[in-house]
Length: 317
Image: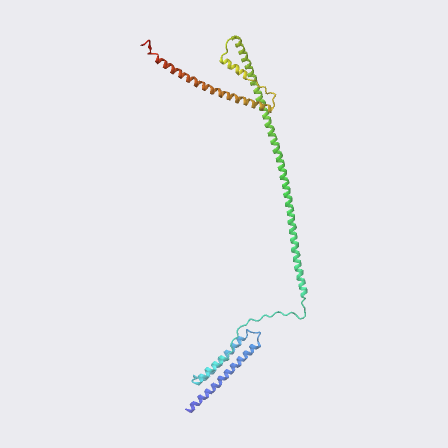
């Protein structure tokens, strides 16, 4: 039994020695990876690849050691393997998070100096040139607007003068038309007045001739009758002949004609009033005559009735 146990102990010691050696190799690989990381700060993308290769090498070495044992570890050997694997995991380098490269401000060249006064002057000159361009464009636009305004005022004034001229011509034409219309009206009135005057003259002439004839007829009748009494009709004719007066208005002016017309109007009014009074008098006389006739008829009837029977000499007849 001692002989069998000794080889086992020897194998375990060999395995224990080989495992730390593998762990040391893994640590050396990790340290080399860390050193590569520290040395290559500029090459950030190559660091994860080195860590992966070191991890794969350590894992392959551990597998090789376990396979060389050809037995399943038990007891302390299993604990030793777990501890080795835990140490390997702890010592395994962790991948660093990717950090974007930091931008640095460009450095001004030391040989050439920058003239800020010159830059400021050029900037001011550029702004001044733009301002002058804007001012020139503004004044040009304003001058153009003023020219258009002057032209518009000239057109308005021209149109105003043309309108005033047209109104003056229209007023003159209207004045001439009214003057012609007034002249035509006066001419027509004169023609109508002349025509009415001629008609009145003809009528007066005819009336005068008839009156003369009638007057001659009356004179002849009076001479023929001699001392005979004039009838009521003859008296009426005589009165009418005396009242009819011949009109002599050919030489009268307009105002005289107006006075004559007013005079005739008053005379006509007087005649109408006299006619009305005579008609009322006639009505009153007719009423009185009718009343007297009725009274006469009543008296006649009463006188006839009392004359039939009467007492004469004490006897009834």
